[in-house]
Length: 387
Image (cartoon, rainbow, N blue to C red; front, side, top):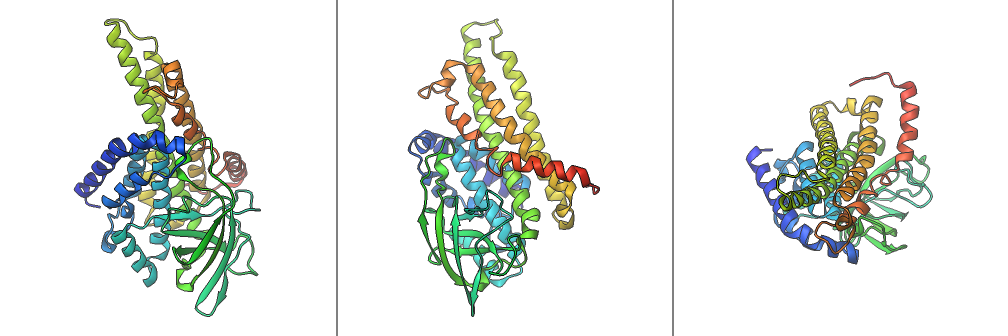
């Protein structure tokens, strides 16, 4: 997109992060409520169409640009950053795999005009976290289809304007023969089957639910999820999630820096006890952030040759990014806590990093690191292709 237009978008998100997200973050966390003030502001600033192509009314942001937006917003509120990231992942799936469909082109234009928020339903009871496997299936009838899905989580389902759902292509299809379907509000009913009282990321409000839907077949995304997953959903998820996790660590380190500077002012000429640890933690954070940006930039370069996004070398790189970042960010937040001490441990302190700590722990669970490490081990045995 035009550089000046992106700078305006980045400035708007930075202001939302500081003036709205950060001010409501503790209440969002304490009450486990949706960050409605933030999403309203994102709509007003046209941020929800950041990933929609310019010819359809959006900003047409690159992966690098989207990653920066997620990182900045999560510095104010982790849950807000995650909602934005999840939405951008769903938009990317529609853009990259539905752009040749008149229906999806029109819908993406509606996203740009009305700033629709799109949620995700990829998990399912009985698949044990494996997004590349579905039990539910599409049942077509004439020009329509029916779908029933018992999901373990529905990303901010009560607040979404639409849902992007995985399902088997048909009742006689294998568990891995999946498609994506878009369900607009009014196409479905969603009955909660669990609550959302979590350790962290409490504002994402994503309990399980039973989904009953009926919609036109034109709302089935063309192609196979076997292609859209590695080409789009996986890289967008790992890169944008990694970026927002780094944003969490950045805010924790900002609090640690402020604390150490305060100590320095109290004793001029004396290096504070935590200064060395602060420098080390900052270097760790810089390394993670650069890793994220490098992967985002590489994705943008590969974007025109999607076949390279299907090979094992790229899959290994994406898994490594996810594992390294999801394990590294909690360590950095822990370093911030050690630097600050008891004031970082107290929830009523301006230096508190308790929320950051809890939110960062979700990272290793979102697409389980254990599952990814098992995949890594198998792929390293056979990988021959290189980027």
